[in-house]
Amino acid sequence: QVQLYESGGDLVQPGGSLRLSCTAYGRLTSINTMNWYRQTPGKQRELVASITANGRTYYGDSVKGQFTISRDNTKNTVYLQMNSLKPEDTALYYCNADIVDDRGDWGDYWGQGTQVTISS
Image (cartoon, rainbow, N blue to C red):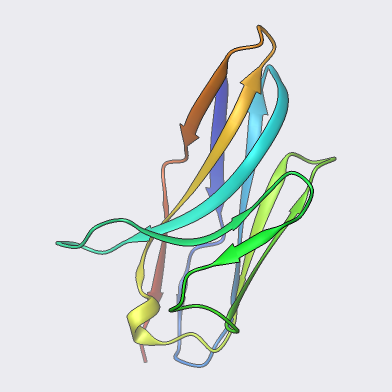
């Protein structure tokens, strides 16, 4: 069984920074694309950033130049460095990944979410 576990969410003041982490645990063979999404009440889940297994990145328009996604394949971990945070970045942030388990089965996995709150 494969699970994703996020950490790093917190309450910070506007202009501050946070780094989110998400690690895949369990019996897995490979991790393909890893993504960060965010969601606020009453809104659709928004794709924030993606990174492929070989490091190609994608960013949503709202976070370009502000957030940086990276990964450490040796630790099965993806990071989201968030700078110059604004109140509108407040959301529940979810990690998502395409993972092949040790039986060779592909799955789309989600973490439980980590809350980011930007407020003075």
